[in-house]
Length: 165
Image 1 (cartoon, rainbow, N blue to C red):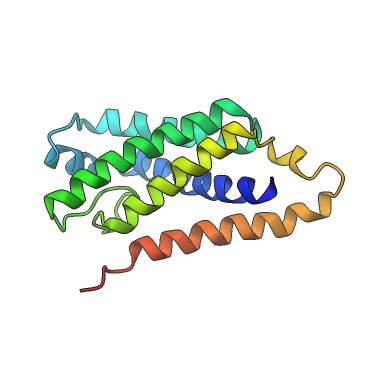
Image 2 (image 1 turned 180 degrees about the vertical axis):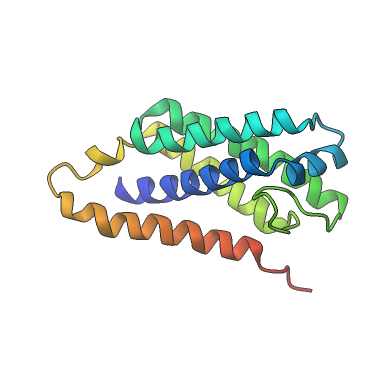
């Protein structure tokens, strides 16, 4: 169960970081959506980012089926958008993380699909709120947090590396 929780919460950290980036700097995501001829008003991108942030925080604070399902749904939508961007062959930034220049690649597609699976697994075997995850052994929360945050950063670093030629 803790393995599912770790991967699911890594996806939540990435979703929250991406959401916060869109709230602060919606223009890159707005430009990426415009290239795909999708609705791209900056206020809508900010609203999307805010909802992403709420889903990510609720995964930690509330736990349960609803945040896990919402996370899976977000990542499924992102997988579709990433697939469209990869298929277009554009090297333009995806806008996922605000001003960070990162074109959508197959890596994005892989991460999005794995996050969908993690969200669905967390919904199937509901992951509890973080404060209840290690009820009997609270000392495990610190190393678990290091694994989750470190893993999310590792995924982010892998996504932001230039694609091999």
